[in-house]
Length: 300
Length: 293
Image (tube, rainbow over the protein chains, first blue to last red):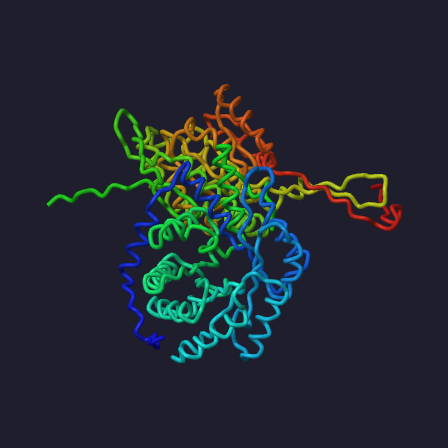
């Protein structure tokens, strides 16, 4: 394959992106389409806990919630996956046996990515050996900023190799540290050509995390990659998406940038911890006609 | 050349900022058969947003020290005093006489001071140590009910409104208030006073619009812990009581009309929006406490 010069990634028209976002956020989604969107959003959530204070019990609760979102409402889907640190993978796999909910693990010295290749490989192997279905890696932002794109590319390729064919790799760009939209596009291209199955905005540890403009840039990168190679790459905005309204706007953006084929949890995910509850509140409101309270939904 | 007067756009107050209603609707406020202003006709979605703001502010407001709440209520009074003339003018626009309007603004300021004074005192008044026959030190303290939705008095645009808001927020609650439909000028201007007097955004949210339209969600919203209705409409009261069952909301009915009377200054009005928490604290030997309880 011809070597690609990533410094030639397309430049992004920031004003154009913002204008597009303004049109998307002005849209109103109601009734049946809203309900359909809400259920879809639930099924696309990577229910996440990535805290230093995580305990086995907390992970167990999270796993239970992933397939019992709110038993008072029959017919709800499960979330797509739970997302935990590698040391909880074994536990999560065990808890989720037979539920269809996948287990994703963050790896490669999450969230900073500041470590050696050996440690990052070990981190990844630990997750894979313990049965993770998906690995969420972080790129080396420092190297990216120093212009060492080959390093970033090789590292992603190395981790993808460690994941093997059956474990899907999500590559976190940490757009909050990357800066401009031009750079986001560049990093997206690097990640996809290096073997990412998903590209993901953020760790959730840095503000700003996922935003609509950044996600749109990444979706367009996915679209261009698809036109060139025919390979469908997934997208995962993560961090800061906590309301149903925002989630629906993301879905709208995916549909209109990539098309309906991407509207499944095979190709689109939300990395979120509190979004699920807000979506549940909205679903209950749609069904009962009465605004709901968090008091009646699980805290996890 | 004569100057063209700049008319004020009266907006609503949610979470510390002044949006227009999301519905884009308005209604004319009529006094003496003349349209005085166009007011936002708030929708249930505005109410929903206001409840989110009130819920978000509730923890912070109730955890402020009682003394600090005193200071903030006093500050509202100070700022209101500074803008007296504007309130008098608006009350006159709404049909009041100058003398009566001045009296109403003065008393509104005094009433804020009255409730400011109670902020760090009502807890002592309503707390008790309870006699129990066991090795426990048993005591009860009042805690704020939470988020209160308020149908403000329809006949007292400023004084009635201030009285209700003061008695609710003095006790650490946050509220969403629907101002009097045809006396709403002062309510929006009072929101501007709140916004500039250290009251955290979301503690008080003020909407303008129609009671009947918003009744269902005001009374049924599950994230609202109490509802206050000022009026006598029996049908309305029955509906509120019925809908409030949804989440066992506390229902308080108060009168509409003349708020000049001193009976509107009472710590019991604070107590209406308090819940009593009782603690059973184990102690080693009951007699060792050296008391009868």
